[in-house]
Every structure is written in structure tokens, then in C-alpha cells.
Image (cartoon, rainbow, N blue to C red):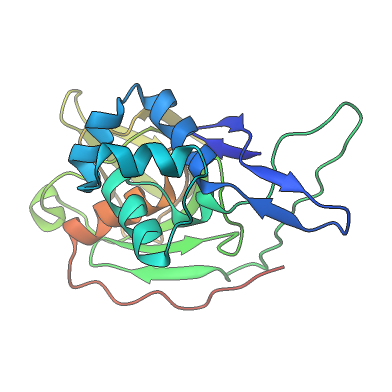
Amino acid sequence: MVAMGGRPQRTTEAQSDGRVTAHPGSALKALRNERGWTLAEVSKRTGLPISTLSKIENERISLTYDKLALLSTSLSVDIAQLFAPPLGRAPGQVIGRRSYTPGGQGQIIETGNYGHIYPAADFLNKRFTPIIAELRARTLEEFGDFIRHPGEEYAFVLEGTVAFHTELYAPLIMRKDDSIYFDSGMGHAYLAADTGPCRVLSICSGPESQLKAALERKDPGKRPPRGRQSG
């Protein structure tokens, strides 16, 4: 099974020795059905002929890495989702996935507005993305354009005072232990509202790749990721 947008779909097959065989064609079909796309729409997005896509979905041809990368990029889906281990479970079965991240570790991405730590960076095919953000910008002029990305977002203030701005609502002042849940497709910005340290725990739905792409568009000069830590 593989999760596409939070719903498990059959894309893998357990073997007698415990290994799992991936079925990316089934994953592609599940994704297409979930998003309401026809084969013609997927063909337009990827540039692949409808006949080729049909053969892929029906497991009649094998996928090269180039085609997998093309599908991943064109359809905005993490390539790991085409090979992820099963997430569904039979009655009574326990799926024991876990990822431990010591304090201060994770995948670190530095931008002018935020210092981001991504816990559980080694955990592929996550259904949501947790981020710890240290806020740096103090004005909208300093922040620049709002950030937008698919899905929904929950934010909890860990430390300091936050001025939360969106394109549809008046600014909101949030203090330690305050939280907010919102549509992250709406333009938004977190600003530090006092002189001390200011940190927010943000939990985002939607593919992690699209979230990071939104940050890259916002700040193309960001420093590269570092500090990937697995548990």
C-alpha cells in the first residue's frame, strides 16, 4: 500500500522473504483517480503519450528512472511515494514505522526569513510535514511576498511573540502556547514581533516537496540543507 494524499492505495506486494515489490503503475493510477485526472490530462502534464501511460498503469511496461523522475516532477509527487513500503494494515497488524530526532537536529534549511529544522527527515512518504521555524523577519517589507503552498497548516508558538499576517485577514498577534490552523494556499507570513528569540512549530499537510519548492521560490538564495539525522 502507498499513501496518496492521505488515503492508502494498493501499490506493493509482499513476498515470502519479507521483501516488498513496488508497483508504481498502480500508484500512478491511484494518484490520477484521487485528483480526478483523465489519462489525457496526465499526458498533457507529463508529455507522455496516453498509450504509454495506460501501459504503465497496467504494469505492462517497466519504468526507467528518467520516467519516474518525470512523473514526480510533472505531477508534484514525491518519487518515494512510487516505491514506499505498505502503509495499510490487515486486521490486527501493527505497522511499526518510527523516526527519532534528537533536539536541535534534523534537516536544516536557512533562509533570510526563517531558520527551518525538519524533524524526521529520513521518514519518507509522510502524511504531514513537521517544521520548527526560528523567525527572523520583523516587517512585511523585510519579509517580501507571502508564502503559499498546497494543503493546510497548524502552527503552535513555542517561544516569543509572533505577528501572523495573511492576505485575507487582519494581522494576528500570537504568544507562547497560542496556535492557529489555516489554509496554507492563502498567502501568509510569520514575523517576529519582539526582540527576543521567536520559534514556531508548524505542521503542514501536502507533499513535502511542494512545501520546500515554495520556500525555494520565495528565497532562491537560501543555503543548502544540512544536518540530516535519522533515528
